[in-house]
Length: 352
Image 1 (tube, rainbow, N blue to C red):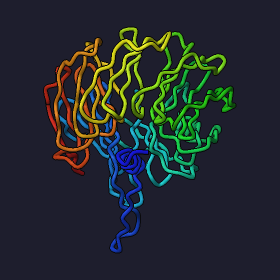
Image 2 (image 1 turned 45 degrees about the vertical axis):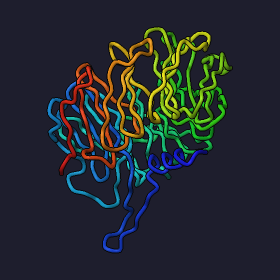
Image 3 (image 1 turned 180 degrees about the vertical axis):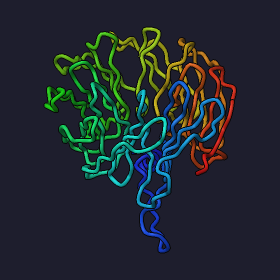
Image 4 (image 1 turned 30 degrees about the vertical axis):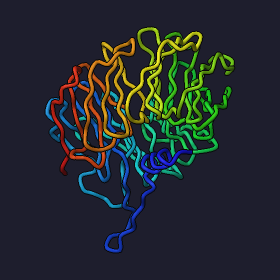
């Protein structure tokens, strides 16, 4: 594995622990987890989860009320209509009221910390943990079931009508029934870091790995439909738009494939390493690079606009109908918001 990819692994996992003699507990350097709704931006970073006003970046609330040096947050929050779900590095998973910022409950049965974003369906939340388990938790915070894989879980599960699709660092994609039973598994060339994506009718699942492969899997049988070899590692999630499958790799390449055949439609190059995946705009695709770049392409691969921020970006941009938001580390501010044309609207480092 390349040295730069080892650095990315370290940052995403939050393994840079510095023990302080003055105060007990870990000190962690990691990347912020950012999510967006129609009106708010949610940021999980270090001691707090913040709700920000999407128009201004002002802090509405933070959770918990007081810093606890045993709690560290880096997982991308899951935002639903009424709640925010997020895990921490003390092996806890929290349900937070979206209006008040107060905890509804905390699930503490995991044996590892939470880096990946959770998913929700039919009142059950599916939380991937670094102990290799996917935890199904009911609306009251009770464990419904858990499913054990062979390695860390960073990828958000995909919840379909009857099946849950799960990518694991053990190189496998798993298809689970809603009772936690494995239906099938499919092995890729490398660890699966980004969430897979379903096509519109649910018949095919698309997943990439850091083994430089993007695959299409028949969701009924678990058999490979096609495989495409990228030039470098695929860390982030793909996206389907304009009848094409878009994804980026860590070597600075944006790809567009025919979802049915896996045939390359085009490849566009850019500077930097995209490790967070891509997001879809009305007129194209936007991605962020480890080196702080923000790039938007039209659906044919032509450049729409670009910007460069001080700092590093390890998560895909999050988008609503007004804003594109990214989180950075080692830069001037923690969170930046742009309009859909790439004009910066605000930036902030939330204060408690």
